[in-house]
Image (tube, rainbow, N blue to C red; front, side, top):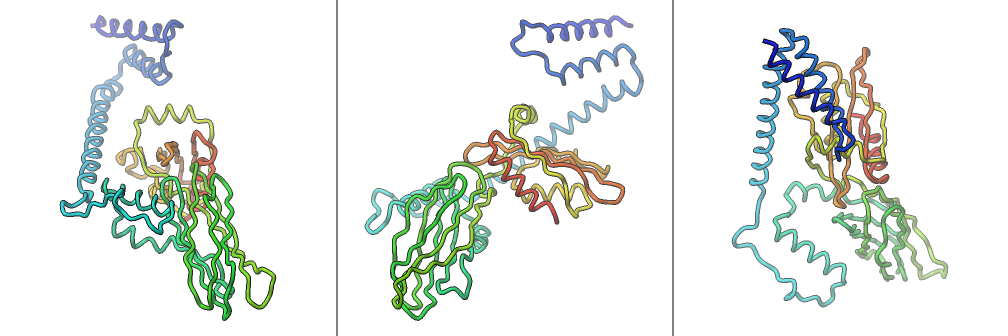
Length: 365
């Protein structure tokens, strides 16, 4: 009766000794060692409940895990298939045959980028068009002699600002210039030229800014002009434009082993204390996932129920190939409030700090 358990225990012991051998290129990890030690304890002192857990509950849990993974993959494939592709009678534009007369190098690059998006099927939906007005930022006050507002378009590696300037005075403004400066990993490509605006005239000034990393940057500046009745130049200070990190990261999926390896490897960590008005753990997690534009790697079945505490892993990837890891650990206290920490890890300091500031700002309801 004891021959089979003894043989299994001998095999597990040999594997443990082999895992600690210095000749191995990769040593045995702690999770596998703990699992084998638990197997030895169960084989040495078998109990009815323990046998039931190992033979039935573990099998049921693994079956539920695999079936849920298949359902997620099928739903993801269904969403990919439902995306609109180019229609057979869509117009095809050849960039080489287009007229480039009167276009700047930036406008030519924008047209090429738009053509590439259309060719690959990455076109904006109707919802995206409806949200474009959210990117219009007021730069000056309504009582200023020059009114300015900017429409910010974020591409992968550059930011295009279309600044609408309106002369609200009754005189002609000469040598009107938009002066911009950047802070962070942003770089102004070219300085906008000078313009002359008649009374009530409107002019759209375009500025192109290059982005080199996923970090919250700030664009600030002013409008300088000369009036007809005086020689000194007048200056209108513009409101600051904060570039949102959410424009550069997108939800992504990775295996649990890969997540743990990156979590141990990344050196930059930002720890944010939970301070929210939410009273439900799952609602708070859904709010964090929605505001950070990240993917929850923890299966929904592991988050079911209400036990008073919650731990989940979130993952996202930036357009520059940077990985963002987030661990949410919260519990419900006796007074009904949530307490815990949100830990952010990344290979670079910028994305960890920027994402932490975003979570601190948005974690309240």
